[in-house]
Each structure stands twice: as structure tokens, then as C-alpha cells.
Amino acid sequence: MFVWGEEDLNTEQSNSIRENGSVYLVACPGSGKTRTLTYKIAKELTELNSTKTWIVAITYTNRAADEIKERIELLGVDISQLWIGTIHSFCLEWVIKPYGAQHPSLEFGYRVIDSYDSEQLLDELCKPYSRQKITYYDCQYFFTTQGITYSCDPKKREIIRSIINSYHEILLSRNQIDFEQILYFAHQLIISNSTISKTLSNLFSFLLIDEFQDTREIQYSIFGEVIKKSNSRLNAFIVGDPNQAIFGSLGGYAITIEELNQISGQTFKLLGLTKNYRSSSKIVSHFSNYKVFDSDIVAAGEHSNYPTLVSYVDNVSKQDLASHLAEIIKYHISVENIDESEVCIIAPWWIHIASITRALSSQLPEYSFNGPGLTPFFRDEENFWYKLSKLILTEPSPSLYTRRIRWASEILEMLQNYDVSTINLKPKLLLRFINSLHLEIDDGLQHLADAFELISQELKVDFKSIAGLKEHYDAFFENAKKRIEKISKENVEYAGSIDNFRNVFKRRNGITVSTIHGIKGAEFDVVLAYGLLQGIVPHFNDKDPHSAHKLLYVIGSRARKHLHLISETGRGTNFYPKWPTNILAEHVFEYDDPIPFISQLN
Image (cartoon, rainbow, N blue to C red; front, side, top):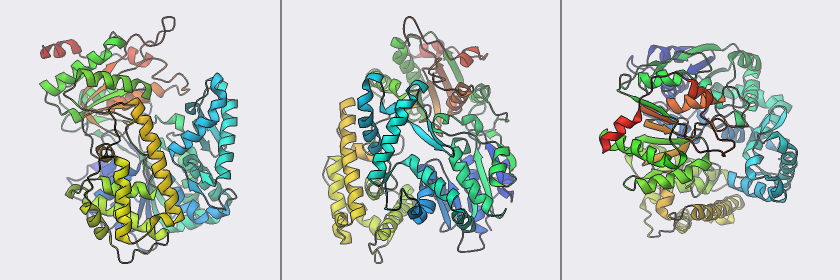
């Protein structure tokens, strides 16, 4: 049995882990949610009484899954009966691959297309509607148990519906499915064939779901069916923070415990993690004002009494914004000696980020910036060549050894699925050979192509003669070439070099620039957020009355030591200027004036 010391977990964490039934755990920011989830999985793994059952954990990202796996291994717990991954990976692995032939749209096979392929096709379908100002960005949609929900302006809905119908018809004719359809087809299979959910309920010993506030209604339905078919044998542990439910436009929402009980046929116990070990008391006090779910939050970490600066200004013009940000950044790095990798700049929309990154790079040439949009290929975990690229592009180091061995194992497993014999090849041998590759080729794509060829020769396998791998190969390189061309047009300094490629998998460095949605789950010593204006935060199309509360809660809860908020002037038009976000402007708080501490630089 897995045990832990008193110093490893606090009382709330221990109690939630020891609870034998199903748990609905509300975890405030910085409360050790991942550690709690890790220990819970470890405990359930050591209590398995059959070698034929699985512990299944659903994470929001593959990166989170990797982190949890490594933490469990470091605890000395065997993970051979753990399946952990995203909801899309779960649906592919457990539903579509074994049962897809039972669905008329999948009976002749399928290939999952990545986001780039989807964007390219939708761009083409939107071109006839350019006069109506229809673009790819209007074509966002998601499935519910009742059908498709469109995220576009209601005035554009009929055109978008027609475009999406054509899009799905083309995918069907090509035997392709996109990420949204993975959930849709998995749900249809489970609902139409009760044997599937019954079989899964017998295979699973325990089900865990991370970030439940970002989970979709159709996902809850899938899990609910599996739990229900177990006749109360299968317990579940779902953890998240309803106050951080900011992915409503993508279908995510924080299910209530009453709804969860109803769809699963179980009675979940409500528990909470209330101690924030990340932020100072002042920062906790600020972002707690924006809670929409009533839960306690107490600053309990090493920074709880830190002499924090929390500033808010609404009189900086758009033209002076970069200079204002630059002054604050210089103060914290040069005066307080905060590392630049611990500084984050947040904007609500991607469109605001490129220009501010360029301006700051010009004003602060001594610092580096880790901006978005420079990834030369999509993170497609289902693509064999993407997985192999991760192994090639990550530097050999003791800290990454466990992770890279796992990736090597996954690569060999994928080869076995393509009927490639790997009986004489072990993960360590594959990793050793890849570590020995030393190619003097600066072009990223050519470097990978040559590395792939050398690996093919070493394994004595003609990868390109295997239809599925050849299809993945062509898709990987075609999409990467197009993406590099697009990035190069927008960023003249980007060259598609092997260093650019390696940066994809390197640990965070430089000042991070991202959106609110993109930064969720991260934490920094200093957070600066701008664009906090009505119509932007919240978005003008957002019908959730609590949207701005949740966004400001997420922004504030990313910060450990300092938080700076800006509602700049000069956005919008002369006739319709954008004003500060209402609830932020109305929030009575003892803000710090940024001018005195900035003046210390002069």
C-alpha cells in the first residue's frame, strides 16, 4: 500500500486522497492540486487487486499527463496499469480504435487530421464569403450531446452552418476526422452500443479527471455512461476550480455536483483544497474578489507575507503602453533581481501580442521574449514523426531521462501497431542511438529528415513503405513547411533553424508573452496584464455574465509576488472608445502607485 509522510501533504489533501468513494474536489489556485491528484493515483495503483484492470486519468494537456507520470514514478510506484492522457487520446484509444468499425462514418478507416489541416480546409471554404467577412476564426464549433454549437456571431450562423456541413462532407469523403469529431463519434458509439460502456466499466478500476471546469458536456456524458454501467463499482475523483472556467466558448463548463450525481448514478462527496501556496496574501485578496463559486482561499505559502505590489492604471495610452510595461519589467528585474523567465505579460487576444512583443524587444534588447506562434509544427501526439521529433530535439539530460525513455517506449509501441517487429529493440537502445546522432545541419526540416533516415537505417525498417507511417510523414513535413512559411512572413527574424525547432521542447526561458487562455495553469513571480477593457474582457460576444470575473481571477492567480493591471486608453474608435472593464473599475482595492517604484530606475 502506498503511504506518505505528514510533511508530504496537508490535512485537506490527505483527507481527499483517503476518501474511498467518489470525490468532487474544488481546488483553489496554488493548492497542490497536481500533487494531490498524483498521490491519489499512486494510492489507487498500489491497491489494485487485478492485473487486468486500469486506473484511468484524464488531463487537459499531454504535458500535464507527462508531469504526473514522472511524479508517480519518482514515488516508486509501478505505472504499468495506469492510462493517462487527454480526452481526445482517451476516446481514440479506448473507443474509436477498438469499436470505430461499428460507426458508418468510420467503417472504412479514418485518419485524424491536425489543426493545421483543418484550418487550411476551412480557409478555402470561407473564401466565397469574403464579402460577408467570413474567416476561419468564425468557424469555431464544438459538439454537445444535442448536436453542433457554433461560437460565431449569430448573424453569421447560417453561413457558418453551411460551411461546416461542407467541411464535414469533405472529411467524410477523404476518410478523415478532426479533433471535434473524435468526441462526437466516441459519444455516438457509446450511446448506441451499451456493451462498450459496460466493457470499459469492467476494465477500469478508478477514474480521475483533472481540470473539470474545462470539461465539455459531451465528455461528462461519455464518462457518466461508463460510471453508470459499473453499478456503483467504479468510483471517480474529479478535481478543478469552477472559478477558472474560462473555456466556455469551446464548450467547457464546471459541472455542478448535483448534475454529476445525476449523469453518473453515483453520489459524489464535495471536498475542497483551500490553502494557496503560490501567491502573497495581497494577491490572494485581490483575485478572491472575482470568485463566482463561493470557496475559501487562504495564502499559506512562503510568499504569503511578501511585500507585494498590486497596481492598476487606466490612464496610460495605447501609444505609451510598451514604455510603461518596459519600465515595470526593468524595475523588477534590475532592482529586485527577479529572473526574466519569472515575468509574464498577458493580453486578452492574440492580435494584441505580436505588436507589443516587437515593441518591447526593441525597448528592452537586453532581455529575451518567449512569444507565441513560433512553433514550426503542431503538437500532434497521434503522429509518429512528431513523437520521434520530440526524442530527437530534446537534449539528453538526467532530468529528462525518465520522460525520454517513456517517449522511446511509446515510439516502439506505435511501430508494433504498424506490424513492425521491435522484439530486439529496447527503449534504452533506441534512446542511446538517437543521443549519438550529431548532424551538422542548420535547417530544421532537413535536420529532422536526415535524422529520420538514419534511424530508419539503424532499425532496418523502410518507414516510407508502410502506408500509415508514410501518410504521417507526408502530413508532418507538408504542414511544417506551410507553417514555417507563415511564421517567416510574420517574423522576419525566424529562420526555421534547428535551434528554432529545439526551442519547442525547451524549458521556459525569457519573458513570457501570452493570452489569458494560453497562460492558464502557469505561474510567475511578476504578472502584467493589459487590454482589460469592456468588449475585450469580457469578449463582446460572450454571453456568460461572469466571464470577466473568471478571466480576472485567472490573471491574478498566476502571480506569486507582483501583479500589474492596465486598462489603456486609445483602443476602439473616436466615436466608440473602449472603457475599462466594468467590474475591475468598480473594484475597491488599495492599489499601489507604479510611478514611485519605477522612478528608482532613474
